[in-house]
Length: 448
Ligand SMILES: C[S@@+](CC[C@H](N)C(=O)[O-])C[C@H]1O[C@@H](n2cnc3c(N)ncnc32)[C@H](O)[C@@H]1O
Image (cartoon, rainbow, N blue to C red; front, side):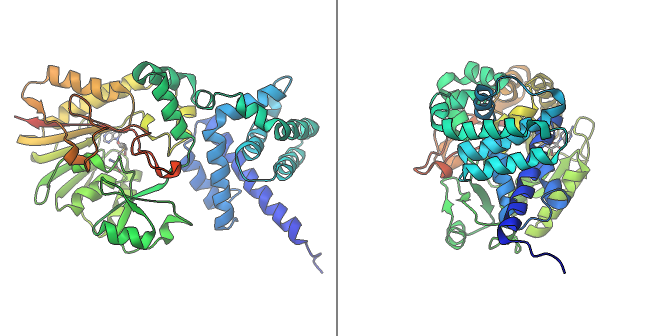
């Protein structure tokens, strides 16, 4: 007969699987530079977390998110308590300690549980076993000294790697850099774009209608189970990401190119508004997602898998949206892994690619037609400076300034030149969790 396992032993087993999965994910992101979204998807589908139920999967997400959002503070706190760094062969223990520290410092997990689960993981790995007392001592001390350590830290500065901090300080000033980083510590809400009846859907989903028309909610449970998902009434899209397509105005009946379209949030907006959309992207895998998204929403578009730097359309367009590939530094709220996987070295080459794409795209526009250029970056090279240079060097185009009425009456995200510049702390609400926007830049240009 199989020996009966006690309820608490089973719970400990589940707790352990969740922590193991969290450590695997943090290791893949920080040591191997993998994207958090991809690793999470893989782990939950077939890795250590695949057997977990929804509640425990959510715990894995929460632990990993906290470990990455608070990475700087966690490293600083552990450094204060460890006399020397670990030998290379025990490097995985750094991740086990970080995941333990995230729970002790920032999560509603009893200290003794976080400590014991970390020590159990160390004991289970022969290379780490000799360090089990160290792990135990450091994490227990962390629990004791939590308040003193946290009070002594500059959280925002620590949680932003140097490359990003220096850039933001130079462009926006230290105070703004602090404000950005403060927003990055908060797990953002779910923003969705509805096809119609925002007020009705807000009521059904318990959401708020933002001034820009997007809905904002804190979902309980998986997104696919929310009301209206299966019937294609809405799609997930940050409220800032929903603005660029709106800048094209009424596109009903127009031929519109959505360039760099996948996974299709903006394609869906344009198609839902009645445009005949040609959606172009280089990535076949991402276009498959775009196709699936459109199918769920009951929307259609011409889908083209092509590299924009050598593709040419058969006929010109009435309007174009170019959502160019970029450093994505405006999306750290939703991608807390990004600052730790990037170095900023890619920004100049991305800016050069964006300029090339923009120059090609404008030649596909009918006279009098408009193009919206946008990036989800906070870096001026990919936004303001890009457009300033474009207007200086390209005759036959003018900026059509963005007005507050184009973006639901918001005035803060409009630059003196009339471009859109959303910042992570825009759209402040009383409740921090309901505040914030991704950092987007957009400019609207007209062919004369
Ligand atoms: C910011 S994402 C687009 C997001 C999308 N517009 C949306 O709203 O869902 C940038 C896209 O550019 C695509 N891309 C990158 N280089 C490209 C190229 N040379 N030609 C076409 N697409 C490219 C990427 O595959 C990626 O899907």
